[in-house]
Amino acid sequence: RLSIVRFSSRPLFLGKSIHYATAPDLAGNLPDPVKMTEAHCELSRRLAEGRADMWWKHESSSESMLEAVQSAAAVYEKVGRKYFANAIVTLECMTAKTLSEGSYDLQGFHTGMPRLGLALARIRKLQGRSAESRMFAAVALANLEVEVPWKAELEALAANDA
Image 1 (cartoon, rainbow, N blue to C red):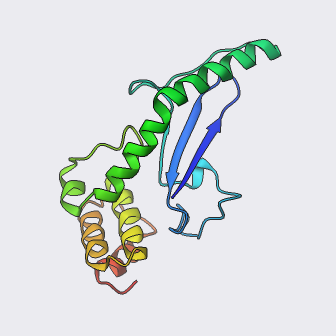
Image 2 (image 1 turned 180 degrees about the vertical axis):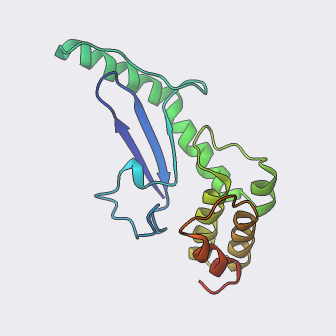
């Protein structure tokens, strides 16, 4: 898995993302961990102690920026690592049934159900868990509400042809 942490500028926020390093990115390409950004990742969220985003205001002085970064780092130490760890455990243990029912907690990391189904189908296939891959793809297909460019890939995964 690949975890990305990104700082914005003004006001400061801390974005966190999760993506499996061997799974295709949002564009369907194999990721380059050196060049990968939050925009390429399947799951992302902004750092917060609760469910709402946190922003750290700062002035243009070095002291003010340092204070904002240190405060954000303290929140990351307090809750950020836990969010990453718990979301990874959930992704590893998730079944097609829990995806279909929505009975999972990704710690505020978000993506749509069909997109998450595609990601999990890809990951399970890479892990050699073909039956689970097919089931995740089937759930994703059943929940597609619009035409998407990756529908053919989902259909191939569901049919075990991918």
